[in-house]
Length: 117
Image (tube, rainbow, N blue to C red):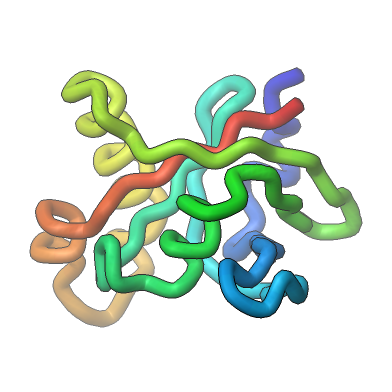
């Protein structure tokens, strides 16, 4: 099921991963963009980001947007076309209202896909 527009337009989502060492839930507020049944996030810290490392260890996660919680499965984006789509969607959503320049983040951050179940 594609994400309804009202949820797609929310400023943040709340990603809950499972800690790779602790096994405990870890919640993170993060920017997102939706495309069909997939949510895209980008990690400025790339592979060093704890949330990325947690998802590498345990791909199953949840995302809360507004009052809705979704079960998702994470994967790194490797397809060049999907990579470009993720970057374009996130920059289009956040760059216009952001005070700083997001172009470096848009070029260098690691895109991660969350497929909604």
